[in-house]
Length: 272
Ligand SMILES: Nc1ncnc2c1ncn2[C@@H]1O[C@H](COP(=O)(O)OP(=O)(O)OP(=O)(O)O)[C@@H](O)[C@H]1O
Image 1: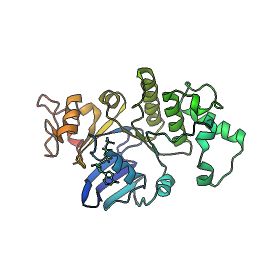
Image 2: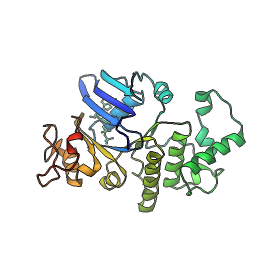
Image 3: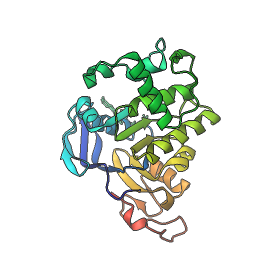
Protein backbone atom coordinates (compact mmCIF):
# COMPACT_ATOMS: atom_id res chain seq x y z
CA UNK A 1 0.00 0.00 0.00
CA UNK A 2 1.16 3.52 -0.78
CA UNK A 3 0.61 6.66 1.25
CA UNK A 4 0.71 8.95 -1.79
CA UNK A 5 -2.35 9.02 -4.00
CA UNK A 6 -1.93 8.53 -7.73
CA UNK A 7 -5.02 10.67 -8.29
CA UNK A 8 -6.35 13.21 -5.88
CA UNK A 9 -9.46 15.34 -6.36
CA UNK A 10 -10.04 18.43 -4.27
CA UNK A 11 -13.14 20.58 -4.01
CA UNK A 12 -14.89 19.22 -7.08
CA UNK A 13 -18.23 20.85 -7.88
CA UNK A 14 -20.45 19.82 -10.76
CA UNK A 15 -23.91 21.08 -11.67
CA UNK A 16 -26.27 20.31 -14.49
CA UNK A 17 -28.16 23.56 -14.94
CA UNK A 18 -29.66 24.45 -11.57
CA UNK A 19 -29.03 20.98 -10.11
CA UNK A 20 -25.79 20.60 -8.16
CA UNK A 21 -24.78 16.95 -8.42
CA UNK A 22 -21.28 17.08 -6.86
CA UNK A 23 -20.46 19.38 -3.97
CA UNK A 24 -16.91 20.06 -2.78
CA UNK A 25 -15.90 16.45 -3.43
CA UNK A 26 -12.52 15.18 -2.26
CA UNK A 27 -11.36 11.78 -3.45
CA UNK A 28 -8.10 9.88 -3.65
CA UNK A 29 -7.03 6.70 -5.47
CA UNK A 30 -3.78 5.00 -4.46
CA UNK A 31 -1.42 2.84 -6.52
CA UNK A 32 -1.57 -0.80 -5.50
CA UNK A 33 -4.98 -0.35 -3.89
CA UNK A 34 -8.61 -0.93 -4.71
CA UNK A 35 -10.79 1.99 -3.69
CA UNK A 36 -14.49 1.18 -3.64
CA UNK A 37 -16.73 4.07 -4.61
CA UNK A 38 -20.11 3.51 -3.02
CA UNK A 39 -23.33 5.48 -2.82
CA UNK A 40 -27.03 5.11 -3.41
CA UNK A 41 -28.66 5.49 -6.81
CA UNK A 42 -28.24 9.11 -7.85
CA UNK A 43 -25.51 9.86 -5.27
CA UNK A 44 -23.19 11.06 -8.04
CA UNK A 45 -20.81 8.12 -8.64
CA UNK A 46 -21.17 8.06 -12.43
CA UNK A 47 -20.94 11.84 -12.62
CA UNK A 48 -17.72 11.79 -10.59
CA UNK A 49 -16.25 9.11 -12.84
CA UNK A 50 -17.25 11.07 -15.94
CA UNK A 51 -15.44 14.12 -14.50
CA UNK A 52 -12.32 12.00 -13.88
CA UNK A 53 -12.45 10.54 -17.38
CA UNK A 54 -12.85 13.92 -19.06
CA UNK A 55 -16.40 13.40 -20.31
CA UNK A 56 -17.87 16.15 -18.10
CA UNK A 57 -16.09 19.42 -17.32
CA UNK A 58 -16.06 20.31 -13.63
CA UNK A 59 -17.30 23.67 -12.35
CA UNK A 60 -14.66 23.96 -9.64
CA UNK A 61 -11.90 21.97 -8.00
CA UNK A 62 -8.46 20.55 -8.63
CA UNK A 63 -7.03 17.34 -9.99
CA UNK A 64 -3.61 16.20 -8.83
CA UNK A 65 -2.06 13.24 -10.68
CA UNK A 66 1.23 11.70 -9.65
CA UNK A 67 1.86 14.68 -7.40
CA UNK A 68 1.28 17.42 -9.96
CA UNK A 69 -1.79 19.48 -10.81
CA UNK A 70 -3.39 18.43 -14.09
CA UNK A 71 -6.32 19.44 -16.26
CA UNK A 72 -8.59 16.78 -17.66
CA UNK A 73 -10.69 18.40 -20.38
CA UNK A 74 -11.38 15.37 -22.56
CA UNK A 75 -11.20 11.57 -22.60
CA UNK A 76 -7.99 12.02 -24.58
CA UNK A 77 -6.44 13.95 -21.64
CA UNK A 78 -7.52 11.18 -19.26
CA UNK A 79 -6.11 8.46 -21.53
CA UNK A 80 -2.81 10.34 -21.86
CA UNK A 81 -2.48 10.20 -18.07
CA UNK A 82 -3.22 6.48 -18.09
CA UNK A 83 -6.81 6.68 -16.81
CA UNK A 84 -9.17 4.05 -18.21
CA UNK A 85 -12.81 3.36 -17.45
CA UNK A 86 -14.55 0.04 -18.00
CA UNK A 87 -18.24 0.88 -18.30
CA UNK A 88 -21.04 -1.55 -17.57
CA UNK A 89 -21.88 -2.02 -21.25
CA UNK A 90 -18.19 -3.02 -21.78
CA UNK A 91 -18.21 -1.57 -25.33
CA UNK A 92 -17.15 -4.86 -26.91
CA UNK A 93 -18.05 -5.90 -30.47
CA UNK A 94 -19.76 -9.28 -30.48
CA UNK A 95 -18.76 -10.15 -34.03
CA UNK A 96 -15.04 -9.64 -33.41
CA UNK A 97 -12.63 -11.94 -31.58
CA UNK A 98 -10.79 -11.22 -28.33
CA UNK A 99 -7.64 -9.81 -29.95
CA UNK A 100 -9.60 -7.60 -32.33
CA UNK A 101 -11.66 -6.29 -29.42
CA UNK A 102 -8.62 -5.55 -27.29
CA UNK A 103 -7.15 -3.38 -30.05
CA UNK A 104 -10.41 -1.88 -31.30
CA UNK A 105 -10.09 1.90 -31.53
CA UNK A 106 -6.54 1.80 -30.21
CA UNK A 107 -4.53 2.05 -33.43
CA UNK A 108 -5.78 5.61 -33.84
CA UNK A 109 -4.95 6.58 -30.28
CA UNK A 110 -1.46 5.13 -30.29
CA UNK A 111 -0.71 6.22 -33.86
CA UNK A 112 0.88 2.82 -34.44
CA UNK A 113 -0.42 0.24 -36.88
CA UNK A 114 0.33 -3.18 -35.47
CA UNK A 115 0.38 -6.44 -37.39
CA UNK A 116 -1.78 -9.37 -36.35
CA UNK A 117 0.96 -11.52 -34.77
CA UNK A 118 2.14 -8.55 -32.66
CA UNK A 119 -1.41 -7.80 -31.54
CA UNK A 120 -2.00 -11.44 -30.66
CA UNK A 121 1.23 -11.56 -28.69
CA UNK A 122 0.45 -8.35 -26.80
CA UNK A 123 -3.04 -9.59 -25.98
CA UNK A 124 -1.64 -12.92 -24.79
CA UNK A 125 1.00 -11.21 -22.65
CA UNK A 126 -1.55 -8.87 -21.09
CA UNK A 127 -3.86 -11.74 -20.18
CA UNK A 128 -0.92 -13.79 -18.87
CA UNK A 129 0.26 -10.79 -16.82
CA UNK A 130 -3.17 -10.77 -15.19
CA UNK A 131 -2.99 -14.55 -14.68
CA UNK A 132 -6.15 -14.98 -16.72
CA UNK A 133 -6.82 -18.66 -17.31
CA UNK A 134 -10.53 -18.43 -18.00
CA UNK A 135 -10.10 -17.48 -21.67
CA UNK A 136 -9.21 -20.49 -23.80
CA UNK A 137 -8.60 -19.05 -27.27
CA UNK A 138 -7.72 -15.48 -28.14
CA UNK A 139 -9.36 -15.99 -31.51
CA UNK A 140 -12.74 -16.78 -29.99
CA UNK A 141 -15.56 -14.42 -30.96
CA UNK A 142 -16.67 -12.28 -28.07
CA UNK A 143 -20.31 -13.29 -28.69
CA UNK A 144 -19.43 -16.81 -27.49
CA UNK A 145 -17.94 -15.67 -24.16
CA UNK A 146 -19.60 -15.82 -20.75
CA UNK A 147 -20.35 -12.62 -18.83
CA UNK A 148 -17.26 -13.08 -16.67
CA UNK A 149 -15.03 -13.69 -19.69
CA UNK A 150 -16.40 -10.57 -21.40
CA UNK A 151 -15.65 -8.54 -18.29
CA UNK A 152 -12.13 -10.01 -18.28
CA UNK A 153 -11.56 -9.00 -21.91
CA UNK A 154 -12.83 -5.46 -21.22
CA UNK A 155 -10.52 -5.14 -18.21
CA UNK A 156 -7.54 -6.55 -20.13
CA UNK A 157 -8.26 -4.06 -22.91
CA UNK A 158 -8.21 -1.24 -20.35
CA UNK A 159 -4.78 -2.20 -19.03
CA UNK A 160 -3.18 -3.07 -22.37
CA UNK A 161 -1.52 0.33 -22.84
CA UNK A 162 0.20 0.80 -19.50
CA UNK A 163 -2.74 2.36 -17.73
CA UNK A 164 -2.15 3.58 -14.21
CA UNK A 165 -5.69 4.07 -12.97
CA UNK A 166 -8.55 1.78 -13.91
CA UNK A 167 -12.12 2.59 -12.95
CA UNK A 168 -14.56 -0.32 -13.04
CA UNK A 169 -18.27 0.40 -13.11
CA UNK A 170 -20.15 -2.44 -11.40
CA UNK A 171 -18.04 -5.21 -12.97
CA UNK A 172 -19.92 -8.02 -11.24
CA UNK A 173 -23.46 -6.64 -11.58
CA UNK A 174 -24.59 -9.20 -14.15
CA UNK A 175 -22.54 -12.19 -12.93
CA UNK A 176 -23.24 -15.38 -11.00
CA UNK A 177 -21.32 -16.48 -7.92
CA UNK A 178 -18.38 -18.26 -9.56
CA UNK A 179 -17.84 -15.62 -12.22
CA UNK A 180 -18.09 -12.86 -9.63
CA UNK A 181 -15.31 -14.52 -7.65
CA UNK A 182 -13.12 -14.73 -10.77
CA UNK A 183 -13.66 -11.09 -11.66
CA UNK A 184 -12.98 -9.97 -8.08
CA UNK A 185 -9.73 -11.95 -8.16
CA UNK A 186 -8.81 -10.11 -11.34
CA UNK A 187 -9.67 -6.75 -9.74
CA UNK A 188 -7.38 -7.62 -6.82
CA UNK A 189 -4.60 -8.65 -9.20
CA UNK A 190 -4.78 -5.32 -11.02
CA UNK A 191 -4.02 -3.57 -7.74
CA UNK A 192 -1.39 -6.13 -6.79
CA UNK A 193 0.31 -5.34 -10.12
CA UNK A 194 0.58 -1.72 -8.93
CA UNK A 195 -2.40 -0.09 -10.58
CA UNK A 196 -4.75 2.23 -8.76
CA UNK A 197 -8.19 0.66 -9.07
CA UNK A 198 -11.52 2.35 -8.43
CA UNK A 199 -14.43 -0.04 -8.09
CA UNK A 200 -17.98 1.29 -8.26
CA UNK A 201 -20.23 -1.20 -6.53
CA UNK A 202 -23.56 -1.56 -4.80
CA UNK A 203 -22.57 -4.99 -3.52
CA UNK A 204 -21.19 -4.84 0.01
CA UNK A 205 -19.81 -8.37 -0.16
CA UNK A 206 -17.73 -7.41 -3.21
CA UNK A 207 -16.64 -4.17 -1.57
CA UNK A 208 -15.43 -5.89 1.59
CA UNK A 209 -13.91 -8.81 -0.32
CA UNK A 210 -11.65 -6.74 -2.52
CA UNK A 211 -11.23 -3.11 -1.44
CA UNK A 212 -8.51 -1.44 0.60
CA UNK A 213 -10.47 1.78 1.03
CA UNK A 214 -14.07 2.80 0.79
CA UNK A 215 -15.23 6.21 -0.43
CA UNK A 216 -18.89 6.97 0.21
CA UNK A 217 -20.89 9.55 -1.72
CA UNK A 218 -24.17 10.79 -0.31
CA UNK A 219 -26.27 13.28 -2.27
CA UNK A 220 -23.20 14.52 -4.11
CA UNK A 221 -20.98 14.89 -1.07
CA UNK A 222 -18.08 12.64 -0.12
CA UNK A 223 -19.08 11.73 3.41
CA UNK A 224 -16.15 9.44 4.17
CA UNK A 225 -13.08 7.84 2.67
CA UNK A 226 -11.71 5.27 5.07
CA UNK A 227 -9.65 2.11 5.14
CA UNK A 228 -11.86 -0.92 4.71
CA UNK A 229 -10.42 -2.46 7.86
CA UNK A 230 -11.59 0.59 9.84
CA UNK A 231 -15.26 0.35 9.03
CA UNK A 232 -18.03 -2.21 9.38
CA UNK A 233 -20.52 -3.42 6.83
CA UNK A 234 -23.34 -1.77 8.76
CA UNK A 235 -21.51 1.56 8.94
CA UNK A 236 -21.03 1.60 5.17
CA UNK A 237 -24.73 0.94 4.68
CA UNK A 238 -25.52 3.83 7.05
CA UNK A 239 -23.15 6.14 5.17
CA UNK A 240 -24.86 5.21 1.91
CA UNK A 241 -28.39 5.64 3.20
CA UNK A 242 -28.00 8.47 5.73
CA UNK A 243 -24.71 10.18 4.91
CA UNK A 244 -23.30 9.51 8.38
CA UNK A 245 -22.69 6.60 10.67
CA UNK A 246 -21.65 6.11 14.27
CA UNK A 247 -19.33 9.10 14.20
CA UNK A 248 -18.11 8.60 10.63
CA UNK A 249 -19.25 11.14 8.12
CA UNK A 250 -20.41 14.68 7.68
CA UNK A 251 -19.98 15.74 11.28
CA UNK A 252 -16.22 15.14 11.21
CA UNK A 253 -16.35 13.20 14.47
CA UNK A 254 -13.75 10.47 14.96
CA UNK A 255 -14.57 7.10 13.46
CA UNK A 256 -15.81 4.35 15.72
CA UNK A 257 -16.02 0.61 15.30
CA UNK A 258 -19.72 0.58 16.08
CA UNK A 259 -19.16 -0.09 19.80
CA UNK A 260 -18.14 3.46 20.51
CA UNK A 261 -14.40 2.68 20.41
CA UNK A 262 -12.14 4.25 17.81
CA UNK A 263 -10.49 1.58 15.64
CA UNK A 264 -6.78 1.69 14.95
CA UNK A 265 -5.81 4.22 12.30
CA UNK A 266 -9.27 5.75 12.09
CA UNK A 267 -8.13 9.31 12.57
CA UNK A 268 -6.35 9.26 9.22
CA UNK A 269 -9.35 7.90 7.39
CA UNK A 270 -11.85 10.71 6.83
CA UNK A 271 -11.51 13.18 4.01
CA UNK A 272 -14.69 15.15 4.50
N1 LIG B 1 -26.56 14.77 -17.78
C1 LIG B 1 -27.29 15.02 -16.70
N2 LIG B 1 -28.16 16.05 -16.66
C2 LIG B 1 -28.88 16.32 -15.56
N3 LIG B 1 -28.82 15.63 -14.41
C3 LIG B 1 -27.98 14.58 -14.38
C4 LIG B 1 -27.17 14.23 -15.52
N4 LIG B 1 -26.42 13.14 -15.17
C5 LIG B 1 -26.75 12.84 -13.91
N5 LIG B 1 -27.69 13.70 -13.43
C6 LIG B 1 -28.27 13.69 -12.08
O1 LIG B 1 -27.18 13.67 -11.18
C7 LIG B 1 -27.48 12.86 -10.06
C8 LIG B 1 -26.36 11.83 -9.88
O2 LIG B 1 -26.42 10.88 -10.94
P1 LIG B 1 -25.32 9.76 -11.14
O3 LIG B 1 -25.72 9.00 -12.37
O4 LIG B 1 -23.99 10.37 -11.11
O5 LIG B 1 -25.54 8.88 -9.85
P2 LIG B 1 -24.98 7.43 -9.49
O6 LIG B 1 -24.48 7.50 -8.11
O7 LIG B 1 -24.03 7.00 -10.54
O8 LIG B 1 -26.29 6.54 -9.55
P3 LIG B 1 -26.52 4.99 -10.00
O9 LIG B 1 -25.98 4.14 -8.90
O10 LIG B 1 -28.02 4.90 -10.10
O11 LIG B 1 -25.84 4.81 -11.32
C9 LIG B 1 -28.84 12.26 -10.30
O12 LIG B 1 -29.79 13.00 -9.60
C10 LIG B 1 -29.03 12.41 -11.79
O13 LIG B 1 -30.37 12.55 -12.11
